[in-house]
Amino acid sequence: LDGCLELAGVPSGKVRTVCSSIDKLDKEPWADVREELVGEKGVSPDVADAIGRLVQRRGEPMALLAELESTSVFSGSDKATSALAELRVLFGYLEALGCLHRISLDLSLARGLDYYSGVIYEAVLLDGAVAVGSIAAGGRYDSLVGMFSASGAKVPCVGVSIGIERVFAIVEAKARAADAATKALSRPPVDVFVAAAGGGVPLVERLRLCKELWAAGVRAETPFKEKLERRWLENALEAGYPYMCLLGESELAEGKVTVKDIANTEQVTVDRADLVATLSRFGVPVDAMEAASRARELAGEGPGAKEAAAASAAGEA
Image (cartoon, rainbow, N blue to C red; front, side, top):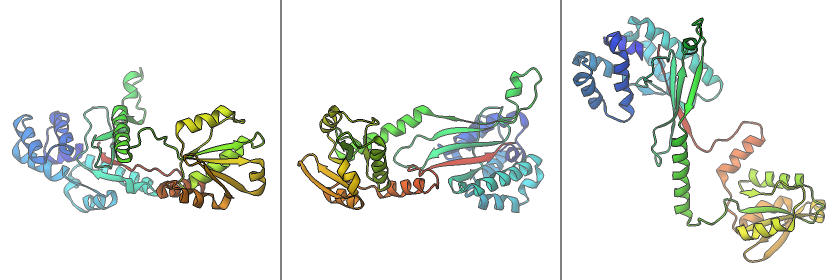
């Protein structure tokens, strides 16, 4: 961004104040930002127009970077040329890690603090239902640590801060939307309570059964106690779990599970391989997306994130 402003003819003494105006482009149209630059910041109309032509570019990282490198616009600034080279290295790493598709290159991205010395970025939630702006931001700051050191040595650093309040606002908004959609505020966020019939079934077997249900997209849980006391079953009934899966010694030996519809006091013992299909027939919702995510995790392909987020990046020399 510093290179863009240098090419546009912004005096070095006005770079930071101009950046603060450019940083409003995610909330205000360019016409309003231009008016502020000319009317309040003392930037000439020609320089403001030159800024607009440069900073209003945003898009897929490699495509936009190739476009910028193919023009001669940035050849007049060593800062801009160096920033483009650094971005190409960064995008190469991100592509190798398989996460470049989550990145957008945004030349208008600006941070208002002087200590940033390189790449800067913001993380935004790609969900039109909850508009809170960025939920995290940061960048590189090689000189910040040295400011507090007697030697003043440069220490390369990269950091990020998370907007906790905004994250909580998102979580609360989604919870309210879910409650309004289901009309079931008192319903537990779990459909199946996994219990043991008798004391001969160890905790590890209940955990294995939970894993199988999670992998199929069924919301299930079991207490992390080796021995289940009677009060656990009573609490499960009071909590309003719709269904229960019971594992007894005989079921474990025969590869079966007893499924109980708590509301109708109906129960059936089925083969373990038929458990998910039986729960589905009983009315237990199966989250296909969650099932796919869990399957990837169990296959060792990394966590499946259900909420998409993207980061915008720009080079600041």
